[in-house]
Length: 356
Ligand code: 5AD
Ligand code: FES
Image (cartoon, rainbow, N blue to C red; front, side):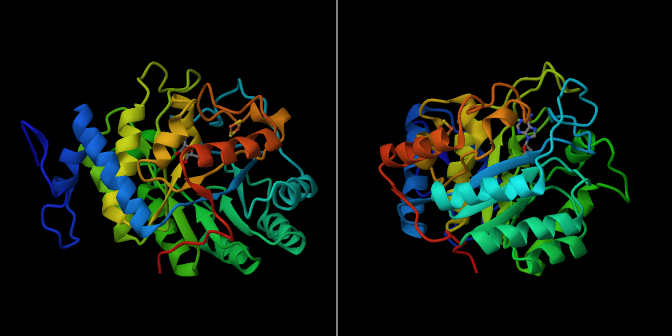
């Protein structure tokens, strides 16, 4: 795909929509400044053609940092005893959501937590119903693995979006990173089945990978991109792996900003009308200008934090997380600035998926 002068057009060698791993790996391997510029421009054109200029905003509330899992990469894994744990009460979750929608103007509230069974299915249903009674918005869930029956109940309560990352499509690597995983529990297969099941319930389904995991290859990342189309995924949320010193992966290098940006760009080129978020992990690698670059390389979503300030420093999946000294209203004005400085407009309506 490349020659001595740089990238030869077209990026899609066959032009029949059937992308393969072999087509994608060379794009992820580009390094020259000119080649990268062309790649990001092509992604930006595809974004404009398939999505338009609107950037949708989802307010994310990190309501509990308790987690029963022990994922090797994650700062709030259950074995990390350096974490001060917190849970936000259901009535406070609803109040925070209400403020985010009715005062800050968000149209989606994304409820995120560690895998915390303290919140029973009944409690989650109540929270969803209470938010929807008070606010005209979408409720999205990012609460980890629950049974499909539970997710069906949450759908019936009114939740319409779900975010469950597959983390990596490399089964061996997945199993190495998730120590509790066995044939019957928390397995790679179960994660894949859950994602498919969420789609069959009717959820707009977000998923994604970490970029730059120890031992991960460009071939693995190409497979991650192919996964989105194979399963008709609505939203890709991907970010660089950021090494947390209190985890078993301490000492490993972080993923790079450049590879994260290439993943966004190639996902846009391959998956066309999928939604792609400029994630907090990406922003953490380049706090100034990082999200603007992502928006100009294929991304069309931002997820500002609506968690009250006092909890923010306790929800550290990775170190140096941005916005831990800011309040929900600081982040709200910040995202508007970012959208405008990337020459884009703030999305109106719920910002539902464009994928059928
Ligand atoms: N670096 C980057 N991303 C991480 N996540 C968890 N730990 C890390 C880390 N150290 C991501 C996982 C998870 C999401 C909520 O955060 O992909 O699904
Ligand atoms: Fe939080 Fe910028 S989004 S301060």
